[in-house]
Length: 266
Image (cartoon, rainbow, N blue to C red; front, side, top):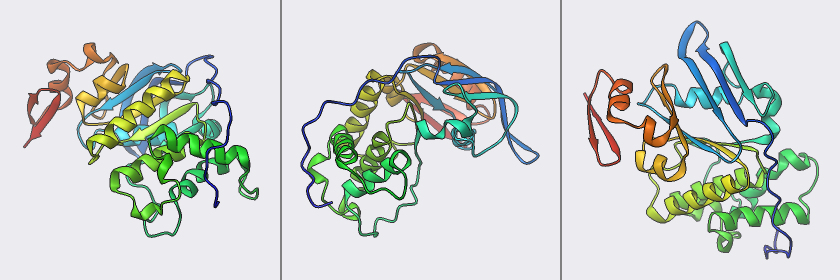
């Protein structure tokens, strides 16, 4: 783990573009007997990004957990890379709102990113040259290759979030799930995450991202799934993020549209 110079190697190949990455077929999700989200229907193709938009408590994080197979689908179906969610986990990467990794834990940025390789290489095998190359490639993709040897806890909040995205990229996923990745980020980190998402899409990776920021949905995503305990719309960003659809989804609150942001009060 001492030498973190980037080895000479060709870039990772593009992902195969065969079949949809993610299919929601009238999917409904519940915790026990309590319904959380009903009637989600839509398709995410390889190389596409879909934004999950809706108020707090609308079911966005729950939908992401259902894609991971952590929450049961009680009716309808979710298909991930042509398989049930649990069977597809090897090819799905997830960046949560709050990661369990303690910033005080004595690991470098590169070591954190290497954690994304464990599922591929197995927990008992030591990282090899290819694993290191992919980890450094991932750090470079988020603009942090020069900080590979920096202790994770010494990075800024935005840099730590970028390292966590790099960890997901190093996993070489076919589907990437991001839960509110832009919350509290500085402009530099936002730009780096947007660039990384664009690069992943170009390689055929599908992206599902939960966000409150409509401007970022316009910049990063092809489609929007508009939710509030059930689906209000699913389709191209410009056709879905209309004032009428947003007011319907955020109903029961005073809602004001300021530029590209939704302001909810009450």
